[in-house]
Length: 169
Image 1 (cartoon, rainbow, N blue to C red):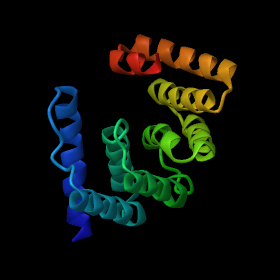
Image 2 (image 1 turned 30 degrees about the vertical axis):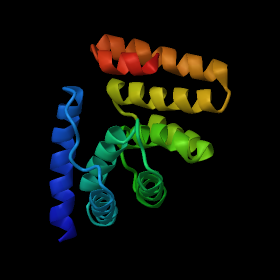
Image 3 (image 1 turned 180 degrees about the vertical axis):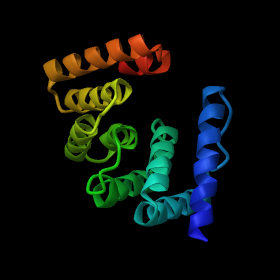
Image 4 (image 1 turned 135 degrees about the vertical axis):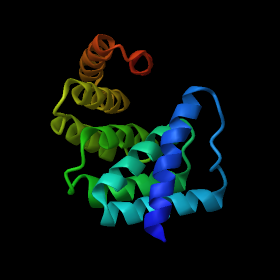
């Protein structure tokens, strides 16, 4: 049952991301739905790393501006127990790192550094730099934050990703 729930949520999160960019509402705002989503994400992290990474990415992006304590704890658990030791790629780690600013700045810093280390493309390097820049800023390392966010902004600009350019400002 968890496998089908995980796939369903991955599909819905992908669609929700498109709808959120268009200003539409996400349909999974109640506690029961969030608990099911967290259970599906934990199951996927343990049994299907690709699906787990997809769910972590969707959850991190969807709940970045209005996270709940349960969502943040779920993100933290998946990152610490699966994403870092499992070699997951930059995108889910970068998104999770920025969300973790609400919960654990030291973990945010560590996850951001891992996201940048795992970057294999220019787009991934930009995401890793973005996460490192935010972590450095929250931890008061202003020069590092400005350097990382400046380079991330240049890379996002070069790629034509204006949404991410805006998020680096």
